[in-house]
Amino acid sequence: MLRFAALMHDVGKPATRRFEPGGAVSFRHHDMVGSKLTAKRMKTLRFDNDTIKAVARLVELHMRFYGYGDAGWSDSAVRRYVTDAGPLLERLHRLTRSDVTTRNQRKAERLAFAYDDLEDRIAVLREQESLDAVRPDLDGAKIMALLNLKPGPVVGRAYKYLLEERMEHGPLQPDDAETRLLAWWAEQPEAAPRFRKQKDLPPPSNLPRTRSPNDQPDDRAPPSALDPAPR
Image 1: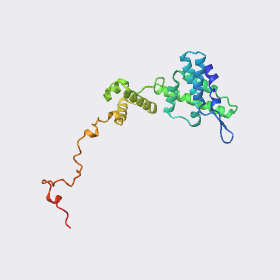
Image 2: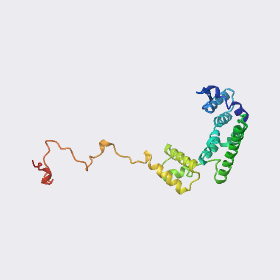
Image 3: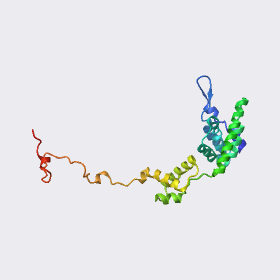
């Protein structure tokens, strides 16, 4: 699996090659294009679906690390890297390290140091929280109970929102997770009251009624309100 990913990891470069001003050559998004080409080729070669999915995922993720080497990542970004790699993380480590083929010794050392640092960050986070299967702090049953919902797409959206919060902020206390979920729910269209259609609503009582020339004066109104203004 890892060897095939190494063989195919740059297969998207010919389709994405661009000549930039100044003579530089770029291969933007060759990882995404390469992942699709890899899956297509492996289907033709009749690999099983699980192997196709795994190899294509490795090809897709093999460039992700380079953003870390340029500017470092937040804890949230490290969590996403681990989660996106899933059980392929160790293979992704090896593929990414082996892809550093530059002859510039200083650049190679800098990238190796950066990846060492990333692996250390992952190890530290693993000591503090579970990274192997990141889940929201409230499960589906608790979400439905808190929001008084039945199973359906809205529950899935709420679950996804809490998963994003978990990725961004790490583990939350149950009370904090409930507070965040309720604040999110208050902004959703499904949480708004079901008003009747406008044509079925009675006219607002606090707005002045437009009078026609045939209207008779209201005897109950104060005389000063009906008398014509003095000339």
